[in-house]
Image (cartoon, rainbow, N blue to C red; front, side):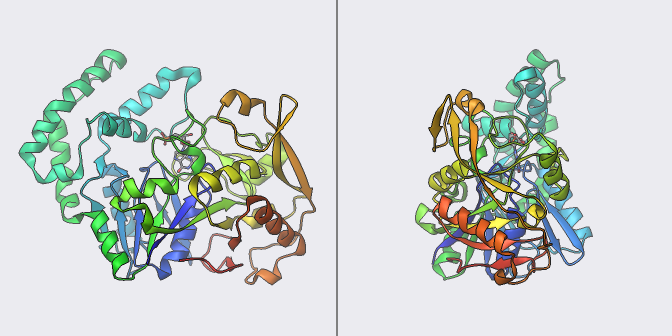
Length: 428
Ligand code: IMP
């Protein structure tokens, strides 16, 4: 038995939360492997809207074990608030487990994220300001504090003595921030330890055992492939690995545990923050998509930049993340647009380019080459069978499959679980 990975195939916000919730009905374990509370997953069940930032999107099912893997950076304050909020909404979170190797996102990471962004001035990245980048920096710099450290108060204090004075000096000398004392950070960690310690597990082992017992595991991606620190539009990326390649190091399992990679693709493209976006629409069509698709960040409320579907970008994502099947979301948002357009190549300096360039300078000069398709006017939100989709919508899906080289197996036409059409068998 092997797991199913659900990855965002664009710049995040593809609707992974809804899809993971929908598929989690069959899962035994849902595990997050990257990112932090920069992610915002919205799940709508009946008349209840649940917003998740750290807790995996399988939490609404009573039988699913939800795991935060070691590849996630964990802000304990945000997690505590999220768990309280979920309890207030009547959601049982007793099946949440956290890797004992996950790194804590500390208060100074939040400060550094904000202050470094300010200092970047016109070169700023447009981060979510949650401290995620600086937490990964400290992990790689061997200055991180791990959840397992909370179980050893003396060792924790020694770790903090090794790290906090240098973080504080950085905050004070470079940014005029008062910084933090070791005692403050020790008390902070111990305050959260009580709640976190009972949840800690060897997450890789938990997942491996579930797979060995033939139970279904979902690996829940956060962000999107174009935000991957290696394969995205660097430096306008997040600091972790949203690609399926991030699962092995982010959970503690071998790559063979990932049997299928399903890429969640929005029927158009959005991105938040700065950085290249070849098919961006800065006209009234872009505004229309934003309003109809409610394209405002779940985490920050920022308006998302909107544009047409970009198959140069998508083919690249399919390749670097090993996507074998596509889940297409928000197709309903395109109703009433005529034509609907798909970028099939770029023109850069008079040349046709079919592969996604690494150079930001080239990307900024890329002019999309579009294919136009007739639109449809029907409201798709009540469609329950693929055959009920208008012919033009079906042709749009077929063209995406042809251009991407992988099949579309699910189509989402609204936020509810029932608004999901099965257009082919999902490999799991
Ligand atoms: P960071 O992850 O907060 O460091 O932000 C780096 C870049 O990734 C910024 O452009 C953010 O807007 C973007 N980003 C981070 N998380 C998400 C997400 O969940 N959805 C969409 N964009 C995100």
